[in-house]
Amino acid sequence: MNQERTTPPAKFGDLLGVGPGGVPVYSSDYDTVDKIAMPTRRDFRSYVDGLFMGYKWQCVELARRWLYLNKGYVFDDIAMAYDIFNLRSVRVVEDGALLPLRSFRNGSKRRPEPGCLLIWDEGGEFDVTGHVAVVTEVFDDCIRCLEQNVDNGKWPEGRDFSRELAASVSADGGYRISCTYPESRILGWVIQTDDDTHAETVADADPDLLNLVPRRVESPPASDDAWLDPAHPDEAAYIAMMKSCKLSSRDTDRHRYFVMSETAARELKHATNELHNMFLHATNHVLQDDALLRRFNLPPALWPRIHQSWDNRRNRMITGRFDFSMSDRGIKAYEYNADSASCHMECGKIQTRWAAHYGCDVGRCAGDGLTESLISAWKRSRVDGVLHIMRDNDLEETYHALYMKTAIEKAGIDCKIITGLSGLRWDDDGCVTDADGVRINWVWKTWAWETAIDQIRAECSDDDEDLRLHRNRDRRRSPPRLVDVLLRPEVMVFEPLWTLIASNKAILPILCELYPGHPNLLDTRYDLTPEMAENGHVVKPIVGRCGSNIEIVDGENGLVEATAGQFDDRDRIYQELFPLAWIDGDNVQVSTFTVGGKYAGSCVRVDPSPIITTHSDLLALRIVDDGGLTP
Image 1 (tube, rainbow, N blue to C red):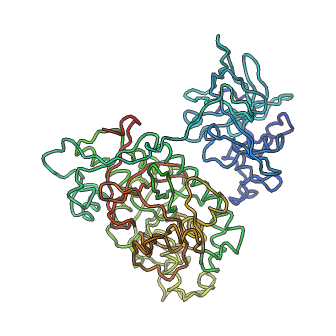
Image 2: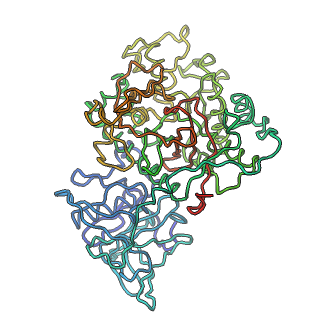
C-alpha cells in the first residue's frame, strides 16, 4: 500500500511504534483481524477513560486519542477525516469548554506546529474519506507525523514517527507540504489557537444557493417514443408499473425537472454522511440501555437477535435513504430509511435515461454513480454463495428487486428472486431451500423488517419460544415461515436486523438528546411540548411507511393534513413543523441515498400534498454550478 514500506505489514492491533507524548500507534490491517478475539462490532470501538475515540485503528481514532491524552480536548464526531478542516472548535473534556480551532491552507504563511493536525482531501490513496495525521516535528524541508491506517509496517528501532513528508518554503514565506501518494492532496493543517492570522475564512453557505429551481426542457423531442428498453427486465417492470415510459405520472410534468447548486449538493453530501454516522452512534447508544430499547416497541424476544445482529461486524448496511426538506431556511432531515428504502432505480437509472431522451444536458445528473456505488458495496459484502432476493408480488417491488439484482450480478454474485413464501421447502438437514433446492443463506429483501415482524407476530402468536426459534416444529406438515428464514442464525440478511433501530422514529428524540442543536436535526420528542403546540408540529407513528398515519398540525389553524394507514396503533413521536419547500404548486422533498454508509446520489419527490407518500411523483434532479442556478 505504501511505497515507503520496508517491513511487512503487522497484524491488526499490533503495536507499530510509540510517538511523542507516549501515544501508541497500531496496525489497521483489517485482513488480519483475529475474528475469535474480536467477534463483535463493539470490539472495534476504541475508548479511553470511557470516552469514545473512534474505530480501531483508523486515522481519526489516533488523532482524537492523541489530542485527548496530550491536550485534554477532542474534536466532536465528523463524517469524514477531511471534515476536520472545517471544524471551528475543540471541546475540553473536563468542563466542556470550547476552544477555537483554526484551519490553514497548504501553502499558508503560518507553518504547522507540533501537535496540530494535518488534513488530506478525499481522493487518490485517501479516496472517499480523506485522512488525518498528527504533526510531531516541523523543519524547513520536511515534517514528521503520526498516523494510522496508512502503512501497517512496524517502525525501525529508535524511530518515533510514522512518516516523513517533504516540505518547501516559497519566496513569500508560504509553507507547502508534499504528499508521497499520487492523486492525493493535502488540504492543510488545523491548530488550536486564538490567533487567526493567515487562517482560512470559512463562511456559511449562501442560503439562496440551497433553493431548488424548477425548469423545463427547452427543446424536447417532437415524439415521445419509448426511451426505456423492455428487453431489460427491470425497465420492463418499471414500464408496467408506470404504464408507459415516463418519470412523472402527470403529463404536464413530462418535460419538467429541478436544478440545485454545487453548494447545495456539497451540503447535502456532508449532511448525509454525518447523519449516517450519528444514527449509528445512536443505535449503539440504544442497544446499551434496555429502557431506551423499550421505546421502540419491539418484541422483547427479538432483543437478543437485534444485539447479535449489531455485534456481528459483518452485518453492515448496503444502502438507505434520507428524506430532507431543503431551502434557504436550511437542510433538515425528517428520518432515515435505513431498512428497505425505495426509489433507487428512479434515482440511479430512470432520471438519467429521461435526461438522455429529452435532451436535458444541463449540469450533471444527481443520481450519477449510484449504480456503481451499489456494485462496489456488493463486492465488499463478502457474500460467498447464492443471494436470494425476497419480495412480495408488487409492481414497485418487482422493478426495485430487478434493478438491485443487476447490481448484485455485476458484483459477481449469483442471485435469485423469490416472490412470496410458497416455494420454500425444508431439506433433510432442517435448512430452508428455494423451490430448486438451493439453500437460503444470504438474503436481500424488499420487505421492511417491521412488516416481517408483523407477519412473525401473527404466525407465531407472540410465542417467545417460536420467536427464538427454540421450539421444535413438525417440518413434515409445516412449511417454512418468514421467521424460519430471516431470523435463522446461519442466514445473513441485508439490510440487517439492527436497522430496525435506525429506521424506527423512536430514535429521533434520542438523536436530539445526543446532538442538541444540530443544524440538520428537527426537534423531536416523545411528548408534545407547549412550544410545538404553539408553533406547529408533525405527529408520526414510530413505525410507518410511505407517509402513512402522519398528521400535520399548524399552531394557528389546527390539523392541516392527515394520512390513513395501518400504523395507527403504534406509539407516536412529535416533530417540530418544518414544511417542505413549496415550488410551482408542489411540495418538494429531497432524498439522498447512502451506500456503504456514504452519500451516493439524490433525487426529488413532489406532491401537492405536504405529505410525501408512495404515490408522490419523482422528477429529475440536475446539479449545476452556483452561477448557473439562475437562468
